[in-house]
Amino acid sequence: MAATHILDLANVAERHNVFGKICLVQIGRLECSPGHLIHRHTHLNWFELTCVTDGEGEIYGGDTKVDVKKGDIFLSFPCEVHKITSSVENPLAFDHFAFYTTDEEYKERLERLMASYSNPQKRAFKSYLIKEMLDGCINEILRKADFKLDYLEAAFSIILLEILKIFEVKRDVGFISDGSYQDSEKMCRTVKNYIDTHLFSIGSLTEIADLCGYNYSYLSFLFRKVTGTTLSDYYKSKRFESAKLMVRENRLKIGEISNLLGYNSVYAFSKAFKDEFGMSPKNYYKFVSGENNK
Image (cartoon, rainbow, N blue to C red; front, side, top):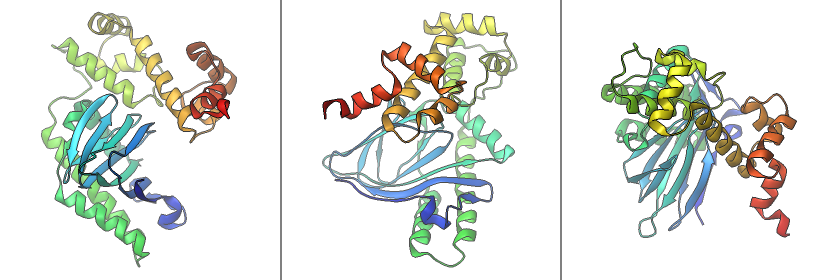
């Protein structure tokens, strides 16, 4: 059994989760037992740092495995499917910090970061400063220290700035195009990454074409030529993949999942889900949770 200490918003400061420009989703500490598995789960509109404090294991961003060991930090993106496995011989221990920002300048910089680092294997890094700041934040919360909110606001800002500094130094490509893409495969990978990390905010696929500097018909043609599937089908499959995971996790109500994915009603979402998977969201949850066998 993994020993875990998750600090939710109620533990931080009477559900106070806004610290300057940083909105805290969750912060915590976990020590895994040998071979422990944190099952696939979906992140919503937040980033998450996993800071390995001991041992070794594997972190998945989508279906891509990243090997990590003591001293490594992994950055997960919004809407990304996430999974962690611990080594049997050298069990994993880590601190984690999930957050988002409402500040427009920071949001823009994080957008550029996501565009440049769609490959999860490029998102493992080392930072003594982030490690120490995150450790200090957790200890500050546990000790219920004076000036806690001021400390956390300052520390969270430093952590975000350090993330931006580290990745912006290495950044080699942006998303918004000047219309002169030379590498169609690279562009399609970037389009996939944009869809993967904006599942809950895309209003129309035409906005992606606008960002690329192409009309939608041409982008769709190019995407199908390179990937073998249409842009619309890829978007649809990722939405259903996310819906299925969220239903299985049972953290959100069906209505909340429906709203998150942009359906007009629970009925419309349930019908679409049943058409895709052959059963309603409610029955699917019963099936995967074993309730039908009780």
